[in-house]
Length: 252
View 1 (tube, rainbow, N blue to C red):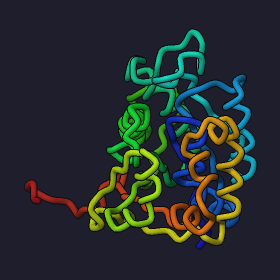
View 2: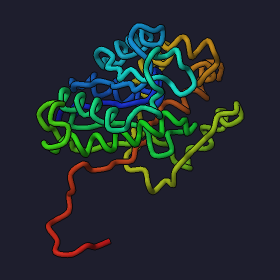
View 3: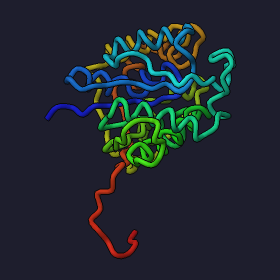
View 4: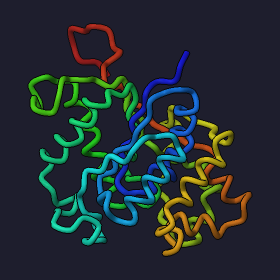
């Protein structure tokens, strides 16, 4: 069975490579349509150019950028509001337009914690994506955003408690580590066959490597430690359409 089309929705340039670079590379290698929507920064910035290179490496097409400002970097989108301060209905509507245009079967985004660090832009991107996936299939919501399209599933990129040992170097480097109970994880994906591609995509974000953000921290770790962090991706699946049979009462 061919891999389903996949759209990643992430807060910043580099999130797509760090959290879902392996899955994006795998689906593209298997012939699936893949793409990424990035909530912050703009194409005419250095980080926008770096995102374009990372997506080329992952086979995920051209950048799709919503153009809001990073919470901590106002110059990331001059003249635009910070993502977390923009009108929610506006942000959701812009993402709905991308969902209806690309028509993915699967959508991938941050988990409810906003990933390991809990960055506010990550948390808000999770909220926006959850709302947009629900709205995209309803014809009377955002009627100017294109014909309705309902993705089959939303997957939340996450890390289980059992991964804490592999993540210990990040914790020692001062990075927050938010993890979920293992039983919440519904997909554990070995992306080691695509690890070289994923790492090349991470390194394409040179600005973040040079300033010592997550890509820079990873670049400073021994290869075995880095591979232990990046070679598995974990996800929580949320079905966009209920699989339950028809009922006449609410059940738990």
